[in-house]
Length: 349
Image 1 (cartoon, helix red, strand yellow):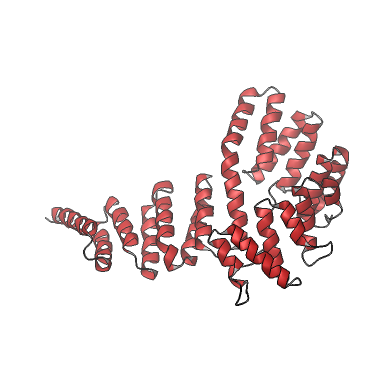
Image 2: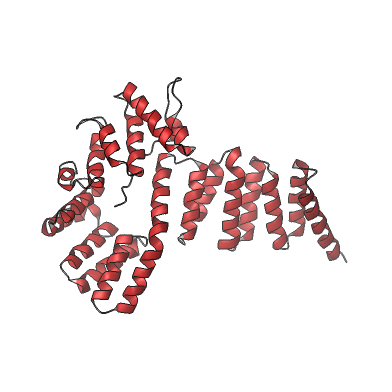
């Protein structure tokens, strides 16, 4: 089960560490996860009633599947962040019976977690009752509702009845791996072997990519304005074929970037526009926008190369002039400029 971090929207820049303690949030986004956790734990020990840092610490540990450490750092039942996390952590530890006591029937996410716990405990009838009791809370179009209806039917070997529910879950959430696997299994068991094998093969191919995506999205929820995190999620969305989402996420990454990360993010976004979306004009526009804010010869050279491939030679030349002004002795820039000038000269009558 991927444990969502909905509700944990703590901007890493809002975490105010004391002067004698390096900011755990900055350590986290720099990739120093162990150091970030150690710093956050030290801060929590000094300030046990400070909620935000403890919740950030627990969120990191759950993200890294360090469930026992998260339970230890959560503190006693009824503590400052207990209600949001204890049930989820106990599920991660496989302690389903204990988790049930901490899961609300009034919260959609926790209501689904109750169904999971009951099913894992070998109580499918109770799981079904819990699911239907939560149906109104979830809504008729909820993917989790459709998936669990299918899974409970499949557990009773009612595979023909389960298939429409798995298909409905996938229509609402195309990357629902449980529904995809369930659909493949039920198709095989109803004699639709070719489609079943194709669905299971698709599941096998997607699992590692979706795992990366889930981890990246959850990491982003802990630092939602961090440009490299946004670009990482956008890149995986592009691999998954979520092109509109990737386009919007790359755009946001470029808006949120710092000078240090601007060129790598802009170049990656431009490659997506040119090679995946087949939209060189969008790639050039994005590069020009970032280049104006963060002048970098790499950005202008890439803009020039894309413009030249699109036969926009005058535009390409203007970008190369910008790059040359930043790096006058760079022979590769000067050679590109000569080549564009030669092509422009050939166009003259």
